[in-house]
Amino acid sequence: MFYWIVEAVLRFLLLFIFRIKVVGKNNIIEGGVILAVNHKSNWDPVIVPLTCPRKLSFMAKSELFKNKLFGFLISRLGAFPVHRGKGDIGAIKTALTILKHENIMMMFPEGKRVPENEKADPKPGVAMIATHAKVPVIPVLISGKYRWMGKITVIYGEPIYFDEYYGEKLSVEKLQELSHSIMKSVYSLDAAKEAK
Image 1 (tube, helix red, strand yellow):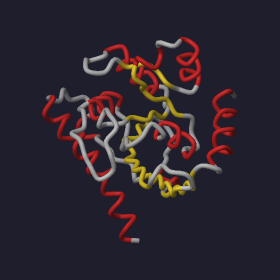
Image 2 (cartoon, helix red, strand yellow; image 1 turned 135 degrees about the vertical axis):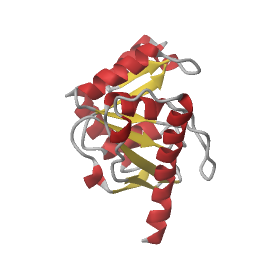
Image 3 (cartoon, rainbow, N blue to C red; image 1 turned 60 degrees about the vertical axis):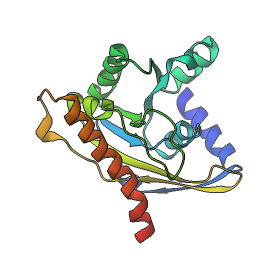
Image 4 (tube, rainbow, N blue to C red; image 1 turned 90 degrees about the vertical axis):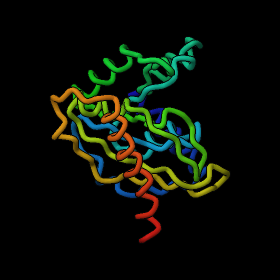
């Protein structure tokens, strides 16, 4: 209930800040699934949940949980901590549990904010979690300028399935390759939008 109340309030407030357009919402399937999103601004973890009809869970850097009140608040909104720069087994187990219970999780494969028109090498984590949890990945692109009444477009692509890798022990190189292909699908949504 708390999640949906906060979402409704934020959606109302953002009507006076940005013009948000959503494309491809019908691609958001049921069951366990990962949303792989490009990350350009601190607004991204706010905008995506507001455009998704399902309640999202997501990893947030552990530093955000140092303030107990803020940590409690964002945890109620679906966040759980991850220690960046190291293999956080606890965060991975939490993610796998979320997906095992057929919930939806948002991830930023590049692992950091990347300015528009720039790209960064994605981490292997999104591919590793998707193949271990045996769930599809939906590429999501956020485009536009975060400025007052700026137009922000959130595009949901078609689910990507990795069935052929389920049950296999994949090398870091292979996971990296799959993560690259996921981000390629994310950024290709921009070209598809321009072609329309």
